Amino acid sequence: IQRFCQSYMTELAKYVGPDYDEPSFGMGVGQKEIGYLYGQYKRVSARGVGRGEHRFLGGGHGDFFKAPGFGVAHFTNEMLQSRNDALEGKRCLIVGSGKVARALAEKLLQYGAIPLSFSDSGGFVYEADGIDLAKLETINKIKDERGARIGRYIIASATAQFNEPS
Image (cartoon, rainbow, N blue to C red; front, side, top):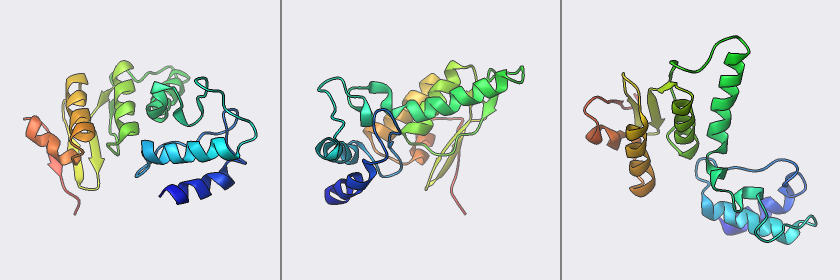
């Protein structure tokens, strides 16, 4: 994985950077892989990255993992506001249950929307009355601390429904 990430960044460095685009996390890409990418970027980049000041590839920035999910919620809210509407009270289905999906749910809650679902390759959970902050914290614990599938959430919730893929 390390050699792949380094080889990939050797070519990608021509097209990304603090002032351009930033690669982000995805399925199967975690802190270790981003670390390999960042290390190679520092080695091959003529632009240089200051110590303690860098933000490229999440360096020193705690919201890096949440930014894509926050962006989806913010964009949606802005789009609705341009049509004299808002996210508040909207019931939202979320596909996925990784860091981006959970950050999206967090931001939807801040906008007053009601997240209803999360999914992964093992199936999906659905909360008819919505997923509030306490339920989201439980899901975060299941996913981050235990590394479990989203289906484990039904053990913690008396109201959630779980459906396995057909």
